Length: 436
Ligand code: XUL
Ligand code: CO
Image (cartoon, rainbow, N blue to C red; front, top):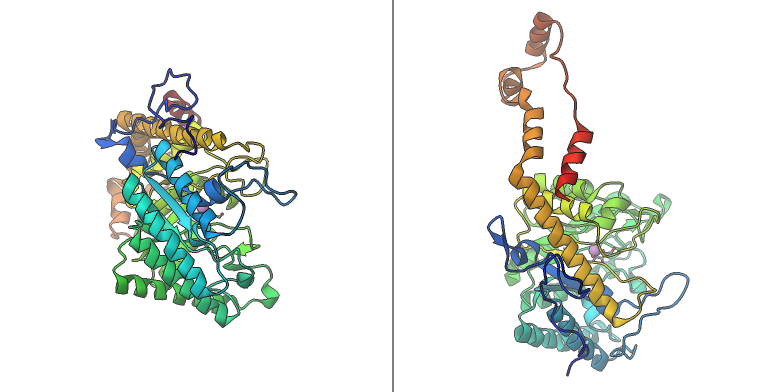
């Protein structure tokens, strides 16, 4: 049975295509820098927005029409969603998907019942994966929606809630492994604070680290190979999120000896909420060997919250792909569309338009980034800009052969530093434009 009989599997149709449901740039088997576009981009569709998003906002209920969903919490409804989801994944030719435990399976009256629901649904997910070849990019536990997590999950003041969260992650890790998930993600939705007057920050962060070490120990025990990924985000829902940006996450991970087990899952809209560009976050994580995966979306510069829009801007996607290629590409990670259709785009077909556009924008970004790298003009400029470090005094400083006294002697002798050169920002921005 098909839920979208009028939609065929989306095909590559070339840049001249006028078919809104065709790829103009994403040609999965085409080689770029010796690797297929499919392997570079590793597209993934999220269960939460695509299958569970209703279009509700703080001012009104959902608007989305989803004929297959009866709105109930029943297992039958959840199982029907699995069928629909895999038809969407397949028709979009997306190799991966990602979920929170509670997106796919309903919470029961007790943890035991909740876990039984999850077992039932995950065996259906497994069947559908096997049948279609669609794979799980990552799993994660939703430890932010249920009221029990009001004070946090791993950083809660309530030890019992910590225990509940541990049990939940244990189960979700087992299911992720059973489904062949290639990563496991932590986004600390409630791991932060609203007010320091009532918060023991040190204790909360110690507990967060303890929680992650328990996850590492359990992963080792069951043989889960994939990296853990932390997803930085500075605000929403709490006033201060502990995992606020790439630098804060890496500082935390390093302080608590967690660096070997964790990488980052960077999200564009989270980067902008943190006051950074996505390119900055990617480059920062990449230079520390911690670039794991990306949640591909975009914010709205006129709105100060996490709007999770589909990415359509070639500058943005080219910058992302340039940074990703620079750091060796996505290994176990992927381009995961943590993005939702607008409340006004309430018809099922909008889900297809949204993903086709996002996939094509990233494919175009990959092509642009590869063109920029092939000609190497920007790389050469950067290399030349730092050439004073390649020999002479610069090379000696880098090699640790100089100190304050020797540098003072050097400068006293010389009298003045060599002249500066222009940073040529405008020229470089113009050069970037050549490839767009
Ligand atoms: C929240 C967000 C999450 C994570 C997974 O802003 O991005 O959906 O991606 O928990
Ligand atoms: Co996300």
